[in-house]
Length: 314
Ligand SMILES: [Fe+2]
View 1 (tube, rainbow, N blue to C red):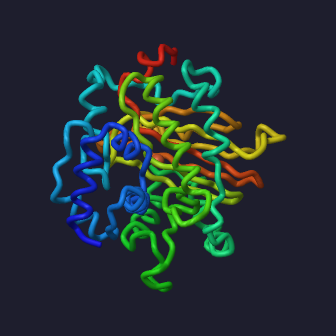
View 2: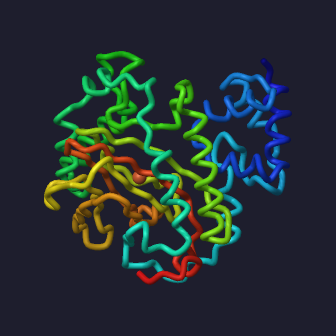
């Protein structure tokens, strides 16, 4: 194991189109360690982080892989956004988007429940107080004070200690689970998904997160302001909802009006929204699955001109 092995692997990965494409299918650093090992390069996560800080990316890969492999290329390929749009979200049925047939076929392989997840621990870390915070408005000063206090302690309960789970994510990040028998099949499906999406958009696309929301899960109010730009989320469930009023949902605050918008969900849908960095236009949003169904969402960084590239209307 060594930093040099990490550097050698990153150089090869940056310079090889096939491997660069695989990097765009990854969001977890453990995934990179595993990919390196499959190619005969053995290094640890800290060694990879050190290697990443000292290895310049080649023309094929954009930023260092451990952070954001393809963001720079996407930004360069995108046209500038001429005016701040007032339409803040766009939703489609997966089957209505041109060129997404191959992506739809991958969903069955992406919607996994890794055997390495400790579901007992997951259920024990549910907090009703946190779930109920999604019914507040992020513009409410009382909510702001609650949020700031939790953020100050890194969303971890100081009384529980440094191993306390983060309270703002009560969900499972699939890319943090690489030590289960289904990981390689899952990763192959992520790789095929990237290939399908890049064909549909005609440019580079990368995964931004692969999340499993079991029953009673949530992602609390946040802005993603440190990673501005358009996101696309493919959302699916294990089964349809019998009652359209009781579903998982995505909620956001319109930064211009402070109106709270709740978007009810159904299986196989695609949502686009833009994370903003301007403090006056922050896109506060949260996600809640208060149902007995399982929900998955697969997020991607997509080019600013995604709508023109897909030839779809708002
Ligand atoms: Fe988000």
